[in-house]
Structures are given as structure tokens and as C-alpha cells.
Amino acid sequence: MTVQLTGIKVFLASPNGLQSEREHFKRIVWEFNEKKAIPANLVFVPVMFEQIHGGAEQAQKRINRRIEDCDYCVTMFWNDLGSPPEEDSPEGSASVTDGEYRKALKLIEEGSMKEVVILCKDIPQFQMDDPGEKLIKFLEYKKELQKTCSYEKFKNNEELTELIDKLFYGWLLNVTNISKEQRPPVGVMDYDDPSSIAGGS
Image 1 (cartoon, rainbow, N blue to C red):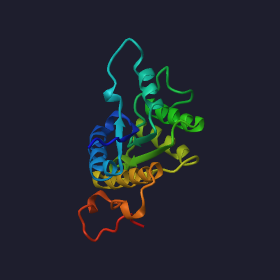
Image 2 (spheres, rainbow, N blue to C red; image 1 turned 60 degrees about the horizontal axis):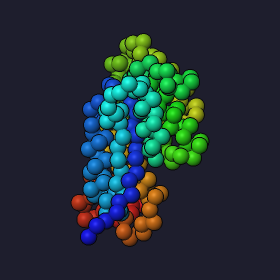
Image 3 (cartoon, rainbow, N blue to C red; image 1 turned 120 degrees about the vertical axis):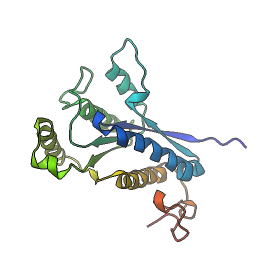
Image 4 (cartoon, rainbow, N blue to C red; image 1 turned 135 degrees about the vertical axis):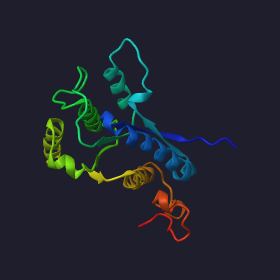
């Protein structure tokens, strides 16, 4: 029997220093699809700059168009703002990643994107004790960021898994009419635990 799935695109913005976390993000999204989204006739599609092929047009312009096609945006930082903003980054952007975050915020204002969230990986204490120029600049940025929004913190891939799972679970409920009785367990790690209560709290 043919089943029609509703695709939900999620753009992941982050500096290059989080490549391991970007790969982990993809794995967790597809694990979430297999265990939770597909049974609800949904599929979450991770969208990243790595998927955008070369061409005569400036790369950031092509990336911005991909962001415009997305329903949600996850912005991830660690200890660096990343590459300087490009010509097609929004005015006032502190970096390419910040520009992609600002682009997503603008799309929310226009009503074409549903939500943008920020995840920040904990900075090792030895770096905090002796911060370099890039880290100082990022810490100043994060301090300003806290005035206008909140963000979730994570220490490792296990905590990142939990954050992503809960985040996508909330989005799944937002775009479906799935009943409480039909909902899968909240946590990926608890999926095979028979004591887990469907729908969570």
C-alpha cells in the first residue's frame, strides 16, 4: 500500500567547527523519522550547506534560497561565530551563521517559517580561562543574544540527542492531529522501554 508522507524541512546553521555535531544531527533526525515521524505520516528532512552544489551564483545566495524553502531552522554554536558575513548575509550579521539565523527570523516575521531555535555546546573551562580573540567575540555575541532570545545548552552528543528528540517531537505534534494514545514515547533513548508512557507528560 502506498503511503503519502508530509515532508518537513529543517535547516541546520552552524560554524565549521561543529562538523561532528552536524553529522550526529543527521543521524538523529533519520532515527527520529524511523521511530516517530514516519508512523505519523511525516518525514523530517535535514537541509545543510553541504548539500548545495557549486555554480556561478554566489554560494550564500543559493543557501538563502534553501533556507526560504524550510519550515524550521536549528542554529548551533560552540566557541566561535564562524566565517565572516558574506555579501548576501542580512545587514548587521556577525558571521555567515548569524546571517542564516537572521534570515530565518525574517522568514518567521513574514510567516513562511514556523520556528527557529538556538543550541549552544558548552565551552571547555580551559578555553574560558584563556579565551582567544574569536572566543571573546563569540561570548560578547552570546551576551547580546540573551537579551532577545533564549537558547538550549548541551555538553555532548547524548544531550544533543535528547534536545533534538524533544524539539522534533514538539514539531511533530504541531503539524499533526495525532491523538495522545497514538503518540510514541518522548525520548529516543526510551523508545524500547516498555515502561515508557505514550505521549509523555
